[in-house]
Length: 95
Image (cartoon, rainbow, N blue to C red; front, side, top):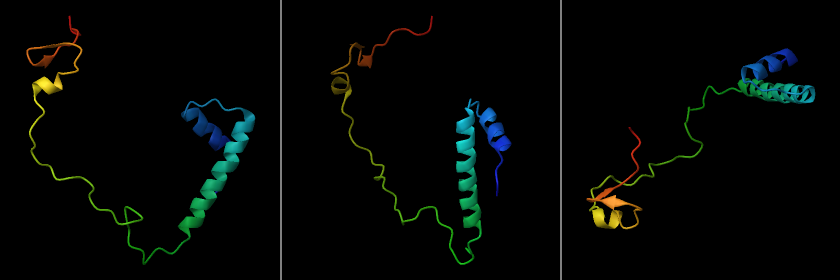
């Protein structure tokens, strides 16, 4: 697949990128090479390949969700800049 300079310019305008002429020329060549590689990949025979989400098998890395005792209000508020009645005090944001 060949991409034209006008198509790259159109994509740049859609992305609101102000490209210089040399940048436009360089991107045209780079995007053409990328599309050429994708076209080459599309020619591969993948009929016997099982679709996968990852290249290596992964297992869930999360721990079990178990209930544990909390640290308590006193410890949670120990380093708070301002606290009152077991709560964090913050500046009023609504008039």
